[in-house]
Figure 1 (cartoon, rainbow, N blue to C red):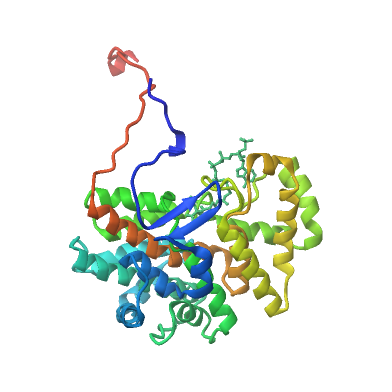
Figure 2: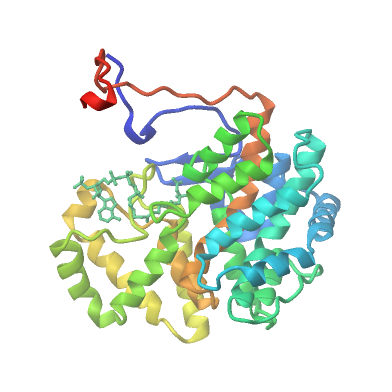
Length: 379
Ligand code: SDX
């Protein structure tokens, strides 16, 4: 009898050299580099290059890569026109998913799966995601989009496009750390989705559009939005205890930003994010939201329900506070997740193409058999 692995728990379906998630020890590495080193020393651009080109760039290669991204940093008028017609209350991830799909309509090389064409499209996707995110954030408020500044880093350029204000070094550094931590995470639901689509030899825009569809759910990329909304519902640090007792323990509500399919200890990204979130909060002189998050985490860490099931804070927990302090509204947070993860998605699409085998699992049929036909008038 075949054993059904619901949710593919523990099922290994491919090999990868992009990233390794050690769920027991709580370690994450990209192409063998620890995220602790990458967040301490690298720019997001260096990490995107590492994922796409399998090694860290030297200075010339990094400059060329930045120039390659800059060459793609445009917001064509037809995107602005179509965004101005979208309903302003649309969920931003629906907008981003649609804009990525439209990008495929206008890219004459969309269906050219050669490595050269795929790499250029990868650069375009990495460059467009922050541009689309910032543009929609403004257009939905009736504001004009701010064009990308090609001389800024991707993190700095996004913050500037989003608010029109030059971000501080502390804000740029905080977002750079976040984007690095989101860049890849082995075979998470949205990355797996991108590989399934790529495995049919479909185009990269279809693969990334599908990945964005998977990311939207609150069990996955929608979690940072749900986590910040939970903190806003709690409102003040003084309310954390009653929320935990009444809502979590009493009503069985899940703590958003907690739990993970693979990590059976604290998500290493959460450890790094807690430090940077606290530092940013203190530099801004406002630890209100950090105090709510830390207070709720401390209660869960002391509760057997969580410790026995090894349910700890994941990447979305503190990152929701960090992004909120950077001026990002909750329902834009999954798009900033996508800005970081775009490097990982395009890397996995390219990797799938290297030694492709159509991804086609099976299902165990448990329905009825040998049923006798009955004509409509006799039913
Ligand atoms: C991301 O995979 C990745 O790599 C994803 C990601 C990435 O980088 O791409 O890391 C990003 O998606 C992080 C996860 C973001 N999602 C959330 O924070 C939403 C809240 N978390 C849960 O929905 C849940 O923890 C999941 C979906 C993340 C994991 O779910 P699983 O592995 O399917 O585990 P489960 O739902 O079967 O839960 C096992 C037990 C259950 O209790 P019992 O039935 O044993 O009584 O743990 C409980 C669950 O009720 N549980 C929680 C909980 N998460 C699980 N209880 C309270 N709060 C929670 N957050």
